[in-house]
Length: 165
Image (cartoon, rainbow, N blue to C red; front, side, top):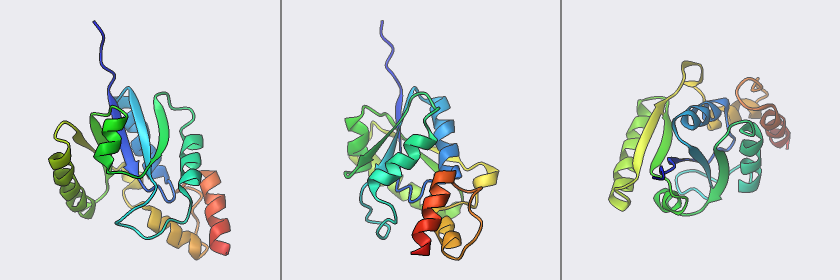
């Protein structure tokens, strides 16, 4: 008798990936056999990204290299379509605050209408990352703030380089 592998998708823009994102990915990897970190290639909700999809994928691949069962892929479709294409039964999202919950509840309802077989699973942000957002990190970097403890070293270097331009 074969046991079906549990696969989850952890979608986001990851512009840039933060230590909070990586915490959610690590925790999801402990719950599922495989976690596909899905890097959105284009976003309706957000403005243009600072880093290309390929660069964001690379940042995450290098930051998660030691995590078994984690792979990173870009996508440009509905997240539920992407989840189906990789055989995922769950979409993992991190929640920091009530504002995240309100947005994610709406997205959950829309996703359920499209794909009722795919569950939404929410992981509460660890306390040390409950304030952390990609936009906040970009703002700090723009004005020369300390970001090295908020993102992987490689990301901090590239972000500071981009913000100096």
